[in-house]
Image (tube, rainbow, N blue to C red; front, side, top):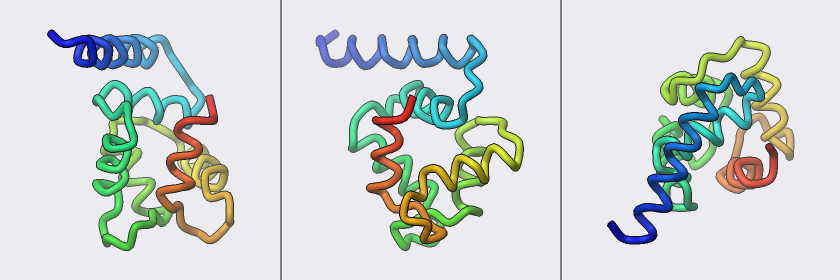
Length: 109
């Protein structure tokens, strides 16, 4: 196994263990779920974002975000979903751009 593959496998396993450990911060849960699914890099995150973006407008509205959270296996209360959405939607446009999604994926823990 190549070093890169081994590193990615280690990250997936660590993320899965952390998720089982009872993480409650919604953004951290989303970050770990992305890692657990192998979305460690920008390419993987782009794929996750595109999967959530049902209408293809390159932005996530609250409904797409809610569905994406659920599809990723995260169980959050409605209030947690709304609060997390508002936190990521830095420009308060009512939609999350890929840039906003990416920044919070890497900088908030």
